Length: 326
Image (cartoon, rainbow, N blue to C red; front, side, top):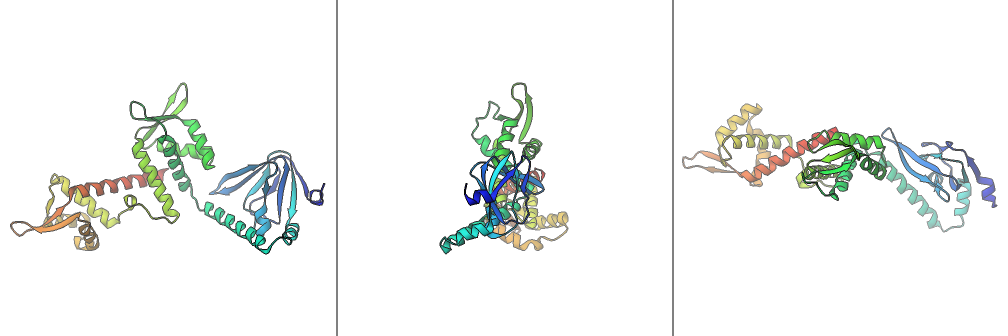
């Protein structure tokens, strides 16, 4: 037995806490036998990072950079470890090239940064990840003769819980909330138990794309055009324009003076306050102007563009509501 094995030998019984998240750290551990669980509290919930066995190393980041422990480590059964102190580690580094010590330091900093980023994920972010993974999971399945995708509930929740490292109950709760929307429901099956029935998978997949866009936005990526939300003023004009067009059975020409009067009456402010928004819609050729045969000013509306815009606006509003509820 080497000097290190004699000097650093540590025994832990099942359930022993080897160190807690936030503790000062000055050593790392090498597992000789047994098993440990590495976990941390994220958003007030325990997240298990890993279960480590013989030959695994843990606690090395605190040893390298001296920062507090970033996770809690608990012995899952009788475990024998070798503990290496920072002093001994630094002494061993002295025999290595200078760049090697810098390399270890950089790696530790990158791991710390990754942990900090993980801490910024909210419960809503986790729910969005569940939606995205359910969409991927179901996309490989064939719909039944009613164009529904049906799958056993428990195995789905278990798989997603494992893949995302989230508590089973949290994933189960997200799926329950999805079944409260028009896209899905659940039913009991005598053979397989509870079943998830996706009634409108294409719409759910679109919602999953929306969740991904919001997740990417938080990571600093640009939103796709289809999920860019219009301003409040733009939305007011679009929805009012749709109302007027419906009332006149989608005839493309609207008398400008009457439109402005109606808009002022509904919104209690003049359309002149919306110059920037109107300019944008003119530039996109949604709205143009003309004089009719009596020299009356008319708005000319591209009905197809308006239908597309209003449909997307309403869909985003629907998805925002769904997103807030999951």
